[in-house]
Image (cartoon, rainbow, N blue to C red):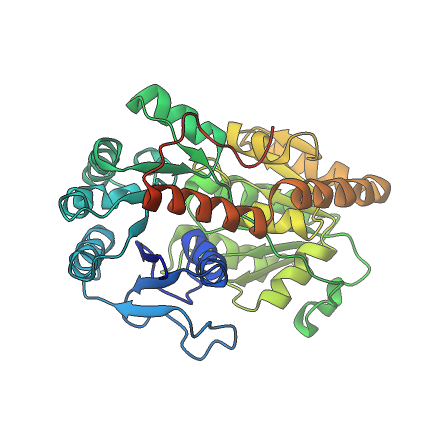
Amino acid sequence: MSKRVAIIGTRGYPSYYGGFETAVRQVAPALADVGWDVTVYGRPGQERPDDPTLDTRITRRVTRGLESRSLSTLTYGLTAVLDTVRRRPDVALVMNCANGYWLPLLKLAGIPTVVNVDGIEWERAKWGRIAKAVFKTGARMTAWSADRLVFDARAIGEYWQRVFDKDGVVIPYGGTTASALPLHPEDAHLAGRPFALVVARFVPENTVPEFLAAAERIARRFPVVIVGSTGYGGELDQHARLLADTRPDVHWLGHVADDDRLFALWQHAGAYFHGHSVGGTNPALVQAMHLGAPTIARDTVYNREVLADTAAAFVEPRPDAIADAVLTLLSDPTEQNRLSRVVRDRALQHYTWRGVCDAYERALDEQVRGVVADRPEAVPAA
C-alpha cells in the first residue's frame, strides 16, 4: 500500500511563484517515482494545469482563503490543514513556519509533520511590525509542534538551535543544468559583450537600491541587465525605468517568465550580482551556479555558505563596493571563465535536485515509520 503525503503551504502544483513552488515541482514527482501517493494543496488561479511537465500522478487540491498580503498564508494554510485532517494522510510536508499555528490540528489528528521553516521572515524589511510578530509566533508554534524541522541552510539551522533550541535536517535547493543556450532575440544585442546581470525581487533586503545606484557607474563601460520588479510599481521600479530610459546600456526586463531566456542570460553574463541578505539557500543563486554565472555576492553568512570559495567577491551593500567588484570582474575574461567552471562544479557536487528529493523522502519516511534521528542530517556537506 502506498504511503500518502500531503504537501501544504505552497501556491500549488505546478506553480512558478517562488522557491517553495520550485521545490515542489521537483519533490512531488520524485516521491511518486518511489511509490508515494502525493497530494499538493494550492490556491485558485496559481497553478498551470496546461504545463507540459505536469505529472498526472500528483493529486492537486485547491482550497479557499483570503487574498491579502498579511493573511493569505495563514488562511490558505488553515483550509488546507482542515482538508488534510479529513483525509488523514500518513504524513504532512508543511512549507513555511507561518503555518505553525495549525500544526496542533495535525498533531491532534495523529498526522506527523515535516516542516520546512523557510527563512527568518520576521527580520525582513518588507514586513510591518504586526506581520513580523505573526511570523515569529508561528515559528515558536512550529518549534513546539513539528515532528521534524527542515532548514534550507546550515546557518538557518544554527539560528533555530540558538533561539528555539530545536535541531533538524538541512535540505537546500537544487538547480537545473542546461546545454548552451543562445540569447533570446530581444537580448541579441548583448552577444559578444561582457555584461552585468542582477535577478531579484525588488525589495530592499535584496540590495536592489544599492545595485541600481551602482548600475549608473557600471553602464559607463559595460551593459547592465536588470531582471525583476516589485510586481505592483513603486520607487524601485521607477528608478529602474528611469535608468533604462536615460542610459542606453541599462536594460530593465521586469519579471522574466521564460526560463530559457533567463537561463541564457545567466550563461552569458560576465558578472552576476546576488544581493539577497536574508533567508537561507537562495534558489536563484543555486540556479545561477548550475548555469555557470560568475558571481559577486553580498557578504552574508548564507551566501558564503552556498558559494564558499567560488565567488569573485563578497561585498558590502554599498554602491561603490558593488560597482568596483563588478567592473573588476567584467574586465577579466580569464577570471570569468575560471569562476564559471568552479561555481558550476560546486553546484553539481552539493546542490542537485536528486540529492534534495532523496533527503525529503528520507525525512518523510522516517516520520511514517516513527523513526527519530539521533542527530541532524546535512545536505550539502561542508
